[in-house]
Length: 256
Image (cartoon, rainbow, N blue to C red; front, side, top):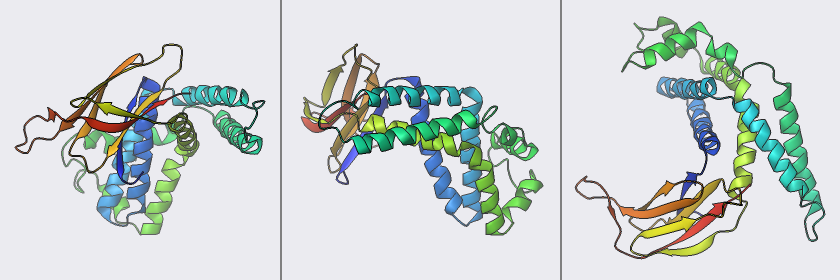
């Protein structure tokens, strides 16, 4: 809702990586559409972050497992009364199509771009503050000075190996975020604790508060128990303090 701010807390490493990638893909789209050189520099930096995550994780395998798990869960609803079967069939079809496209991709995703001399040079210099200046990387400077049509075409080409992964992550996170209804809760003196049923596959905690409240949600814990503290930023730049007020908020325990 527009009048609320939502804080999310992933309950396992897989969902944590998916949400990080979701944010990076959104940033890449934003900066790619910008027409200035700083926009294109930012887009390349985000793409390097995406590539770094893919180097460290077997994401294709993880996502295929998730898509298969979601399909099995949804198939259980097929014979339940009052279920919109046409909508369910459409969702299952989308899951199946996305899985097939991912299965069809061979090798490690984005490997050719990761091994590109240009990207390796940019990655190496990016660890140095201001290390990608024109005198450091004249090839990168040359690319940045090309026409917008050329730069945009290249960015689309370089990011294309990740398109199916992005679609799959969006699909998975949408299912998880909408898997349960929120409950209205009260944090006494800014503190609230959640006990999660060990027999249910909780993936994510969502905390939504009125955006006029002068505090933010700090969530910690694990897959069985979580703690929520509503913190008030300090006016003198000291550490935030827990709110002494009772805070009304909406809590969603996301499944799947």
